[in-house]
Image 1 (spheres, rainbow, N blue to C red):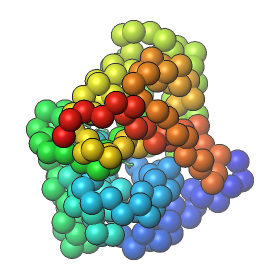
Image 2: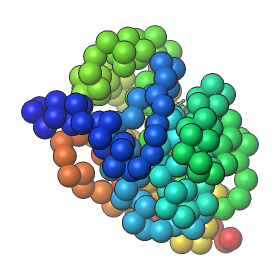
Image 3: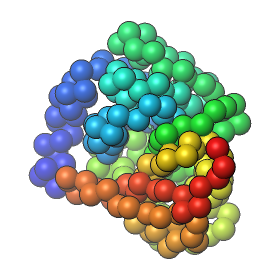
Length: 226
Ligand SMILES: C[S@@+](CC[C@H](N)C(=O)[O-])C[C@H]1O[C@@H](n2cnc3c(N)ncnc32)[C@H](O)[C@@H]1O
């Protein structure tokens, strides 16, 4: 907990550590340290072609582009994509930002596809998301979404976040290059759901801090012909 309070007060510093200026806005998902960690972790792998789905402020996409990857980044919301483009201009970094619902407006093959899915996509809870994000520090927000997930939403087939994950895992292999891989963040309670997708191998990336979010590097067991 103390570590989290410390991190919260130092979030700006962590963003600065990436040497990027990121403007957050009311309508955009705030930058979490999971994203900063993932950006730094993936940058070390030097992927040539990267696709980020659900880019938010664009922080991950911009960091990877700055480190030399060719990056396409999408978000389902046009206003969010506009804000990410602005962050690109602010930092003089080029990312191909596209408005797209998952792969709807995406073409090509990628060495690495990244997705940090929204914590809330259930319409009944989405109106609370804004309240959580704005009125509570981020560490409380992620715990509340985690608790909602465990106690109210777990296992429900109609749970839109799971549907989104399902679509993502079904559609992604067609967009991966021969040795391509996926980085996906999920809640611990999503793991039994992920196990339904047995055509992948899952490697857990250990985070150097406590988090409710788990990051997996996912690789298709059977490669599609590319
Ligand atoms: C948890 S935020 C992650 C933001 C960013 N990647 C980061 O690390 O700060 C999830 C993002 O996914 C976007 N999103 C939700 N559903 C989507 C979909 N079907 N296709 C593309 N993006 C989507 C949301 O608008 C939101 O910006």
